[in-house]
Length: 220
Ligand SMILES: NC(=O)c1ccc[n+]([C@@H]2O[C@H](COP(=O)([O-])OP(=O)(O)OC[C@H]3O[C@@H](n4cnc5c(N)ncnc54)[C@H](OP(=O)(O)O)[C@@H]3O)[C@@H](O)[C@H]2O)c1
Figure (cartoon, rainbow, N blue to C red):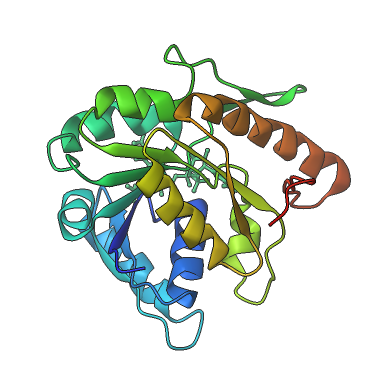
């Protein structure tokens, strides 16, 4: 992997977990935040959580300009404003959406939020026609990622209309022990992946765990 990775919204649990695991796999990710001080503080703290890793911090703009693979790891509610703000800086770059649009209702648990474009990933691609959008990692638990001693279990279904970018993200997933990148086909398929996440959240509440998904029957 010769890419520089930035993680927007990397101050939250999912972004921090991905930054930690990618750093453990040999990358030097940049935590992006709407506040540069917060990005730097979180990066410094996270760099102490595993030996020999380097994680840098910045504001979202600085992180995007320094990277060629940019993860979107903020809540769906922030997508439109963040992407409108950064669209020109994201041109030509690989944009990895880990976003699972979700809401919580008292007594009902988690459910998927309807997205007019079909999914958060498709909406991102519509908003960023000159970027290579890949959707991945939406089903991977932040709690598991954040414990460097936990061996990850499960598959990362990767969807995109850009084959080279998709392969690069599948390879990134493979470098996180013991995740496996699975080719999920075109970006249109990411709606199904995003909607598994509220199901997992509800299963987690029942079983008091951090469940993930595994695709069986493929020879890899
Ligand atoms: N948590 C999980 O286990 C998990 C698992 C799979 C997928 N995901 C997905 O990963 C994404 C991040 O999850 P999370 O739990 O880490 O989220 P989070 O803690 O709610 O937010 C992450 C970061 O996003 C930024 N942010 C918050 N609201 C924003 C807004 N309206 N506009 C722009 N930036 C905003 C904040 O960073 P700054 O204030 O520093 O900018 C925040 O620290 C979500 O889309 C979620 O669906 C989460």
